Image (cartoon, rainbow, N blue to C red; front, side, top):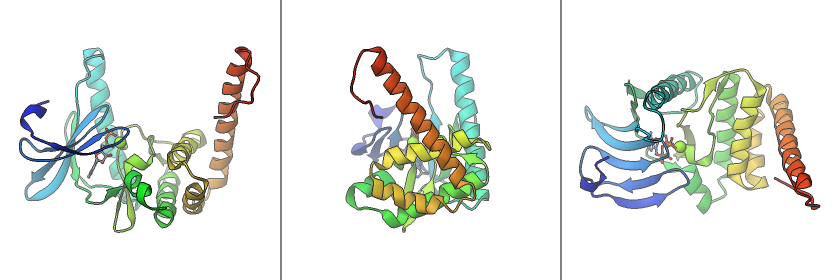
Length: 235
Ligand SMILES: Nc1ncnc2c1ncn2[C@@H]1O[C@H](COP(=O)(O)OP(=O)(O)O)[C@@H](O)[C@H]1O
Ligand SMILES: [Mg+2]
């Protein structure tokens, strides 16, 4: 991937990506996740991020290509759809087979922000953003603090490659569950819910979430029982 001639300096390392501040080369590598490489580039005078889904050698070639193409298109369609619902997310400038170019977001990753402050005000807004998405029957698919950037107190959403258009309560509940787990604090989750409850069907989704959690515990419990462990299992 040509990193040898990029001369980059590691500035942060998250769960999914390494963030690098640049020097030279074909666009500056800002993140390298499980599936994609992200570069900061200049497109006709505009700062953009190019997200390229790179080849995965362990996948059969045809499957690899179709997955990369599918997820790239999916991401572009969902970003566009989310924007139409009034959710803040980057504008897409171009889409090709495995690559999309979008607005560079200059803020701070919610994950990093929460390490420094409680972020309760912004979390309510994150909840509101998910409420809007779900109201419009869009699910994010990977709704964690690593996929939200906060700029001037406002949350911007991105990384929709695993999302979809659906009315399914189960899939919406999984968005809430992923954020709940990623927040790791009752106080933060309560702030997030305050925003999410603006969604007309929030109650139904939260009921489904309880059901998923109950099921999850049950599975863990069943595994413990089958192994002859006697303690109460929790998630
Ligand atoms: N439009 C953007 N502007 C600025 N930084 C971005 C943008 N999109 C992604 N990033 C950064 O790159 C990281 C990885 O991008 P993401 O789309 O989440 O890819 P992955 O699928 O590998 O998680 C993000 O966590 C964020 O730090
Ligand atoms: Mg991500």
